[in-house]
Length: 372
Picture (cartoon, helix red, strand yellow):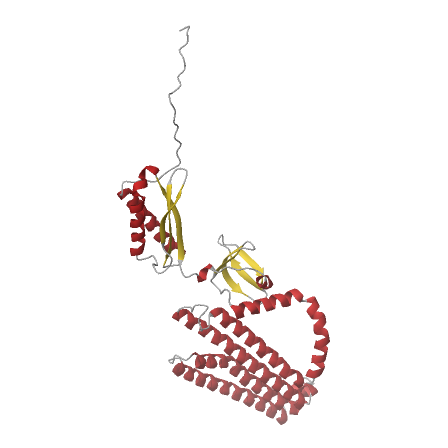
C-alpha cells in the first residue's frame, strides 16, 4: 500500500502526469466548447426562430457533462493500467460510457422539449391567445403534447439502456403483460383519471384561465391547472377545488368564458295611469338600444309591452352587449338602465310600485259616547 501511494518511482510519476494531462485537456476542451457555444448563441439570439435558441440552451449542460464524463473516464482508463482493478476494467468503462451517452441524450431532448414549450407559450401570449375552435395551438394543448413527448423520451431512453445492462426487453415485456393486468385492477381510478386528463387535452372543453361551472355539481370557478390526475379550479371565494379528471367524463359542463356576448334581460313596470304613454316609451327605449355603441344590434334585440301586472304595466328589454368582460358588462348595463329612467320621466310617466286601492261608500266613524 505504501508503494502504491508513493510517487518516488518513475512509473508513479508517469501515471500522475498522464492523469493530470487528461484532466487538464478535459477542462480546456470544456472551456473552448462553452465559449464556442456562447459565441453561436450571441448570433442566433438575434433571430426570431425559437428552435435554434432552444437547441443551443438545451445542449449547454449535456455537452458540459459529456466532456467532463469522457475526460474522467479517460483518466480512469489511464489509471487502470497501473492499478489493475476489476472495477476499472475495459468492459465496465465501456458500459459507463454508453449509459452516460444515453442519459445525456435523454437529458438534452427533455430540456429541448421544455424550453420549446416555454418559448411557444411566450409567443402565444404575446400574439394573443387563440380561440379554442381555431386551428392555432393553445397553451393547454401545448402543455399536454410536451408532457407526452417528455414521457416518450424517458421511456425510450430506459428501453435503450436496458440491453446495455444485460436486461432483455422481451422478457421484461412478458413480465409486464402479466403484471400489467394486476396493476390495472389495482389502479383503475388512477388510469381513469389519466385518460380523463387525456380527453380534456384532446377535446379542449376548457383551458387554463377559463371560467367553468356545472349544473350537475357545485363546481364553479377559474381553471388554474390541468394535470394528468386532477384539475384545480379556483372558486370565486378564492378556495382551491381539486377535481379528479375522471369526473369530467360524465359531467355536464358550461364554459362561460367562451360566450360571444353577454345578455341584458330586464322587466320594467310603469303606472297604470301612464298606459297611454307605453307605446312611445317602448319605441324610444328600443331606439336608444339600437344606437348604443356598446349594444350588439346584430344579435336579438326585443323591447315590447309584456304583461298586466298587479300594480304595473310591464315591458321587457332583451339585448346583448358586445363585451363579455364581467365588470365592463355591468357598467354598460348601468348606463342602459339610467337612460331608461330618463326616457320614462321624459314622457311624464313614472315607475310603479306595489299599491292597494280601497273603494268604499262612506267612512265609518265611532259614535260619540252618550255619557259625554
